[in-house]
Length: 481
Image: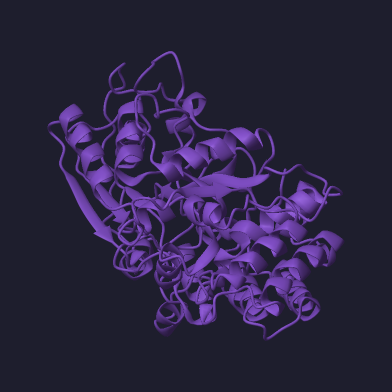
């Protein structure tokens, strides 16, 4: 989201407190102030570096002595993987120096630079202050990454970079037609995460139907364990399991209609059924007491301490919760539980997609350098380094050979294998950041999961949010092709 995601050991970053971002007016950058500034920002002083000579070793024509300006979101994935990739860049281009800036304040630090026409060359656009990708694309602030995708890969010059990527990565970076504006570097498995050890202690199996889910939660409750917890202060985590459940029950076309902001999309029977199912968890007392007041770190800590059985999350949780996770925890992830045998898609249907969105600004001085740094990061060596150090897959389709996979990573790979073609990828969180986080997530689903609104009231409210966004001329709209 994560792309889209605050992965940080200090409890800050991508899913930092909403009120914190709101206090400084920076949530998702949906404001017209940023739109206008980006549209008009043409400041002087942004002279493009001269292009270098293309060769087999330099297919993008990087200026071998030009400096590179790289800004990284400093979250749960840390900085080391980027620093290691920078060393490779500087080794390949010894005349170049890389200015590396890790930060959690992406918008605070970069909005003035975009406005002044002097943005960095490469940005990991993540965090609570993530710049709205839809806005950036709509205002032509990003460079098309097609040259990177069509360049030969580092490992096999006969293969283009695009041919080495996991399914869906290229499409995720597209917003309206062929250009690719974003390269999602991490590959995230979203779903229901749990301790296999705790589940075994209940003599239970992961539930495939909702009746089974309720039975497992009741069993846990009798042992003093809550069925679920979630990031109550950031309830847009709940969709990590709720959205793929909607797709499983009603088919992926229901999710497409929601993404497309179609009238009455949220009124589909599958949405109603899934909202009512989750509300049943609330009504029957299967949610850990106090969850609405917990942030992502606090809810994950309660979960790793065995106070709750299930938590909706992404695969970054293995790294993010490592400090509090017991060695014998048995971290596992499953695709969401469905309703029953009438569901349109089989059990195993899961949400998996690119995360950690990297962009090259259109007005970057050294765009070729930014793309070359990404090309290096998409090599097998860099991918393996990332996977080993942060326990997450990358967009590179491979990079796990010879690596001893951690429990969560192994479970995620198994979940992807089980899903096969039944992988869904809701686009709200990257097409409409503010709508997804603040309105649908906090004002809609958050209120329902806190027991302050019924499913019917929530659906009505969310549909109005979606309708308002669809009619807003200041919002760039996107549709599944």
